[in-house]
Length: 124
Image (cartoon, rainbow, N blue to C red; front, side):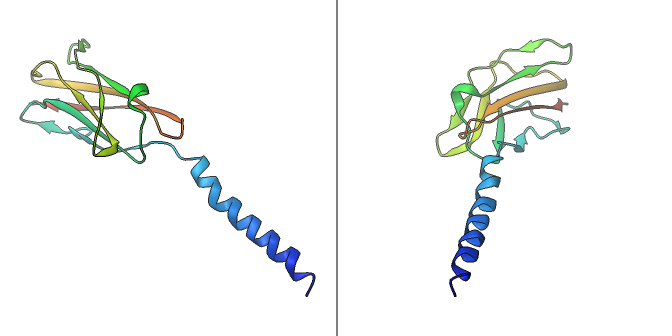
């Protein structure tokens, strides 16, 4: 009976460590965006809306928008949705003309991990 206690202790320690590891490896991945990646929209968006797999730190997160002629499109400061810590909203300062646009985003998740990426969409 005495040998079962150490075995049980090791089994519980192993189980606890395997449950903790995924949390340590977590990053905020882009799960959904509007306009969607590779989408062709008929109405120009008034804002970019980026949804992530976990909460983000708005002070360290944002996006830039590049237009059809590789020009920077002016945006207002990115803000986190007050009701959803996983959603970043980037209001646009101007109406987008027809063409293809590139969104370059970067975020820091609430656990401190940095991620970045890009996608394109078109305005018809």
